[in-house]
Structures are given as structure tokens and as C-alpha cells.
Image: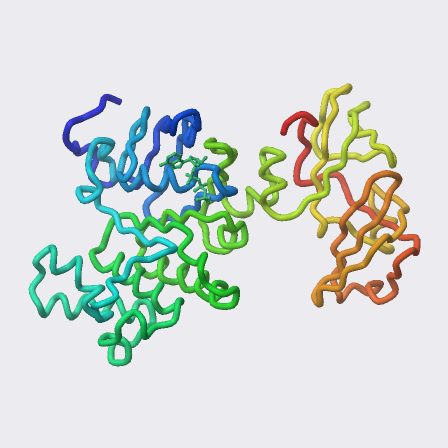
Length: 369
Ligand code: ATP
């Protein structure tokens, strides 16, 4: 597609709200975005997930127009906006270090964007009150407070109300829960998801926290070194990671090394059968989630069944984390506290562990990282 001077109308009812096409962004020798292609749908809660420095914020800033890509095209609602400044893009933004105006009341903070757009006073009041109700802050209690009279979670709700009140097509959120305590963060995750479902606005959410991304998102793009490793639903990226990086970054994984021989992975502790057919001779790693490994009778019945020794047991209330030595490999096994044999497990004892072909999250080439 050619660069255009002005936003050009392409199609009225587009399904893709945000399209990044072949985006490249360099800062000196750092390639912060390396040929990124992402399509975000209308009404989607879409997360950009990756470790610090992977390039998530850069992508968000490119969507916002705060950063101009060296190559590639940004399309919002079917219009090429690559050369449009931020204020001409129909977007709202919420950041971790929010910038509520400290000298203004909650009401005036939220009303700000509406005043700029010259809405009549009665409409401003109705919209601000609706926005406060949406984020569950009763206007009669909160409208006249100053930001300093609010908790961190409440301030973040006001920031969200302020960003949504002008009804942007897309809301961009950069680690908005990062500064909150764990309990409030967990609560706000569910709140954000509820708000998104209620308003139907497309959310693009930047986080390095896989828990947040899994809980809230319709789909997740996993970013690594400026590249998109995988785009998928929470289920897909967790259960079927496409790369070793994704298997490692999302959730926990045991990585079992071996060489394929007649369809079986020969490891140091014995043959491991996997779901997929693989050509002989390859060095691979099998990714196996700790909760997929069974113990006790169901371990003995499994296709892949081994005897090991318990090195350590860590009690976590709902699960026991059991570290099991198999030859020179150590397996992390999650045993539910309700498992009939959980109470019998002792450090130093022998234990049977087992799983079936297909229980593995993936099989990757050993050199893949
Ligand atoms: P974090 O979670 O730490 O914010 P991130 O995934 O959002 O990380 P970015 O902020 O997008 O990552 O940064 C990606 C890379 O680009 C990093 O190596 C960063 O140092 C570099 N970078 C980002 N902005 C600039 C800039 N304005 N000037 C120079 N380098 C930059």
C-alpha cells in the first residue's frame, strides 16, 4: 500500500480495527520493531505480551502516532493513518504513570476531552456521570474529589473513564495496573475485562505479566526482540506454544532434551513418546507443563512412565510443587493438594511420574533459542 498524505476512507464496516503491516522501527542499532504484522479485530481485547525491552511500548506508540515507523503502514478503522498525528487518530490512552490533572476534580478530569470538543454542558454532565458509573465510582461520592483524595486503583479507574468518555475506536493501555498492589491488580483485571465487554471498544493492552494477558485477553501477541513470536488465544499460546520462547515465557515448563529415534525422543532417563511424528536424528526439547505430569496409580498407567526420587516438596496451599530427579534431569511436578496421594509424599522417597503422548505443550528443535 502506498503512503497517503491524508487519511483515506477504505471501507466503512471494517472488521480489523488496527492493522500493523510490516512495521520496522530502529533506535540507532536497536531494532525495536522487526517487520511486525498484527491484525486486531473490532471489539477485541488484544494484548502485546513480552519481556522488558521486547518492543511492546514501541508498537503501542506507533499505533498512537507518538512514534513514526521507519517502514510499514498503520491502518485504523480501514484508514491509513501512518502519517497522521496522534490527535487526528480516533484513540484513547491509559498509562501506568497516569497523568490526571492534580488541581482538577475527578469530574473536570473526565470532562476535559469533552470540553475540548465543545460538547454542551448538559451532555458533558451526562457523559461524565455515565463514565463514572461504568468504572463503578458513584458520582455523588467521587465527582468533586481531587486525584490526591483517591486510592491508586480509583485513580486508574478515573484515567480509564477519562480515556473512554470521548468514545475512541481504540483504547491503548500501557501496563496500567503495574503500580497497583497484587490484590487490587487482580480485582482490576476482572474490572477492565468487564468494562471492555460493556463498552465494546477495542482494547490494545501492553504487559509483561503473562497472568494479566491470559486472564483478560481475547488474543495475545507474544513479542520477543521486536518480533511477533505467536498470535493466538490464551488457550493457544499456553497449550500450543509455537516456539520454545513462548513455552518458557508463558506459564511454566519442563524442557526434556533428547534425540529422535524411530519416532521416540531418547532422553537420558529413557524414551519419551510424543504426539507429533518427527524425523529421526534431530536433537529436540520436549516442553511439558508441571500440571500435566501425574503421580501414583495414574502415572503407572501412562505411556511415558518413570521412577524418580523426590528431591524437594514446596507446599503452596492449593498445590504441592514436587521436584523429582530422573537421572540427570529434574522434573517439576504440580500435585493438587486434593490428590489422594499428596499427603503421603516425602522428600527422599521414590515416586512414579507419568504422562501420555500429546500431554506435552510442544516439541522444539534443541537449538531453537
Ligand atoms: P518495557 O516493558 O521495559 O517498557 P518494551 O517491551 O515496552 O519494554 P520498548 O520500550 O518498546 O520495549 O523498547 C524496545 C527497545 O527499543 C529497547 O531496547 C529500548 O531500549 C529501545 N528504545 C525504545 N525507545 C527508545 C528511544 N526513544 N530511543 C532509543 N531507544 C529506544
